[in-house]
Amino acid sequence: MELNAILTHEHTDFDAVASQLGAHKLYPSYVPILPRRVNKNVQDFLALHRDVLPFKRIDELPPNTRFVNVILVETQTLPSIKGLRPDTVRLVRVIDHHEKREDLPPDWHFEGQLTGACTTLLVQKIAERRIALTPVEATLLLLGIYEDTGSLTYAGTTSLDLRAAAWLLEQGANLDVVRTFLDHPLTESQRRLYRQLLQNIETVDINGYTIVIAATEFDEYVDEVSTLSHFIRELHDPAALFVVVKMGDHVQIVARSTTDDIHVGRIMEQFGGGGHARAAAAFVDNQALDQVVQRLRALLPRFVEPAHRVRDIMSRGRIRTIHPDTTIREAHEQMVRWGHEGFPVVDENGQVVGVLTRRDVDRALHHHMGKQPVSAVMHKGAIFVTPDESVERVQRVMTEYNVGQVPVLENGRIVGIVTRTDLLKLWQSPQEQPYSREEIARRLEAAIPPAILRLVRAIAREANDMGYSLYFVGGFVRDLLLEQPLKDLDLVVEGDAVRLAHRLAEKYGGRGGG
Image (cartoon, rainbow, N blue to C red; front, top):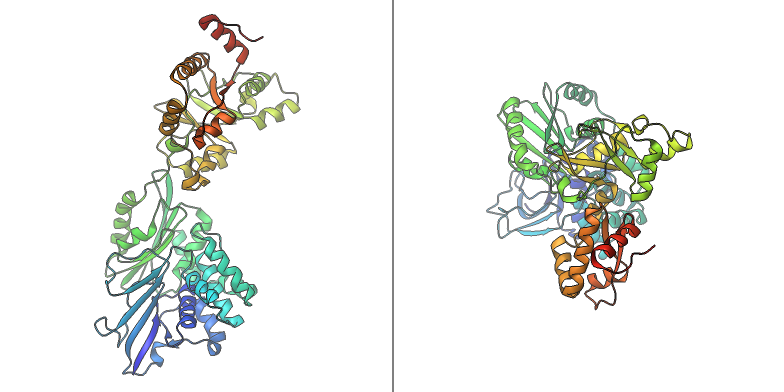
């Protein structure tokens, strides 16, 4: 018997099964074949709705079945099935939301895009072709999207995932059913394994990222180890999590990440597995648990490299500090004068001993504590980061101490500060990223006549000597960025502008403002 089949990977989750259904709606002559191992929550859903869904099991196929054309969904590897041989298959079409494998056979057809769920790619085409869905079909497809995107909250979720989910709701998808099967209770075996994993947790810190490895050997086979990774991640909140379980003669690794700076898919490729940046898995045969964990530890430094470090976003220049004995009223005056929302608090030895925020000062003044030292209300501790630490480290410091600015220390000296505004810059798309200092300098030199540019630089030097900052403002900035002709030039001083004007008048002539 010749068969056109839709296949996916073992240990099948909702995204894989839903993708099989989606492919069948687009290619009705292809039969979706369930793998031997299907996750428990998927099994339970199919047990209730099998009669109205098109799936067949491998053991239901005639023994002489020969696969002619194959569609692979949510995987780029042909599964091991009797009658399925690469040399006899005429056509293999791959539909996947992971990056295309470099070793994919050249005669295979690849269709893919980086989305949160593979199901999304198929739903998009189903909607475009206006193919009708039953409420059960729409619900299964929505389960696929919700499970792989963490109910549309994982960072890998795209606008396409949201649009596909909205369209499925319009087709009758049932959110109550989705919630029931995504919040599936753990079995007794899963609970035992979960407790065992919690007793064997190792935490490592690499490049400012906290990584958790939970490894154990278990005496029976347990489905859905990936489900346990969700609970462990919720409990420990690491940047990346690796759950490593030896069951029988193989070791299963489930990897999860909260940042693209730790691409767990590439790490799992080293163990013969795969996945994408935020979620991946691997199965390692005939190796001891300690061997696998030791190899994982050795690999991590190669693959944990923050794309953004503190030095990439911190504000540089003269960083104003305050002494712990300074009164709260004096601190308030300095905040008003310089327009700062906080100060690092530094003792007479140059050590950072805390951070003072505008909120601390305002609250203290409200309670008539103006004569008290700032040490009475500041956030105490060695609150700082270093230039080579990760942005995630800054975020953890801010949330731990509830401060909006963190000083940056290098060799014991403050070289910059990171504020909430600096963090927001990372939310900008590449097109929105600010111009580099070099590009701004080039544009200034091209736009401003040399004599005026020399004058501006002289003013900036004087301002800097006085501890002030000088800024271009107004229409000049707009015209500079748009490369339009410049009509006038406005400067603003962060400091005592009148004092600066008198100093410039004394040095270069003219009259200082009063």
